[in-house]
Amino acid sequence: MNSIALRTMNDIRFFLLAFWLGAATLFSFVVAPSLFSVLRQFQLANANEIAGTIVTRILSIVNVSGFLLSLVLIGLTLIIAGNGGRSYLVQLALFLVMAIATSVGHWLIAARMRAIRAALELPIDQIAATDSRRIMFANLHRYSVTALGIAMLAALVSIVLIRVRSTW
Image (tube, rainbow, N blue to C red; front, side, top):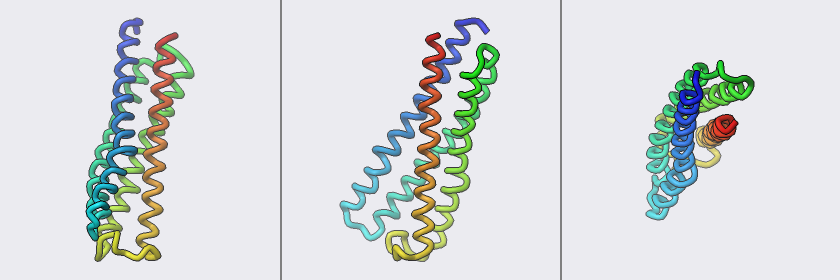
């Protein structure tokens, strides 16, 4: 692959990752906390339920897009991997981590959280904090945050590797 095509492929990979990482960061640090904060200010009995429903919908988009993006990035990296060694193997591993983290976050963790919420007779806010379903939900929430954080970290490291590699 000639240097212009290689640079173009690296630029495409860089911008796709940066776009997804920006969306995931905005969701994690602005959208989700703001939704909960604003709705709680209205002192609704089910403020967390409403915010959680909206956050779940947006998180679904972030996770599925991260999963699909990671598959595209794996494909693009395999196309250009013949041009250089270990850096591409590390990038492939990071994209695989991103794919696993976002897919587990969406199809396992979030699916289980939705099932718990659907099975509750009351909104999650009105279930006792000591109820085993609410405890499980809180644990799954932590796992979800961790999974997305791992995917975001893999994306960030990949961005750095792509930029550093393209300046060689």
